[in-house]
Length: 86
Image (cartoon, rainbow, N blue to C red; front, side, top):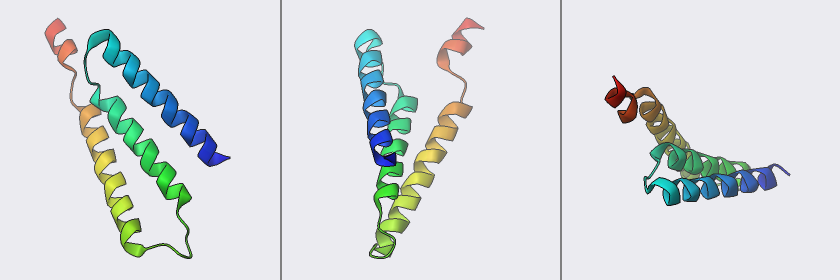
């Protein structure tokens, strides 16, 4: 049931990205990072604890840390449009 929820959430985020791109022809990196984190979370939930490969678990953990760090840095940086308004 949880995987179905993540599949639906992933599809909705992808649709939102396509809509934003069609309207303004901008790539919203924040949305893309969020989609990637949802996809990695889904993969983590599908892992089998007893028959898992330790190296793949380490890689998924490193990927999630990297994506989370990128998302944090993107949110921390002030937007270009707010700087133009000042």
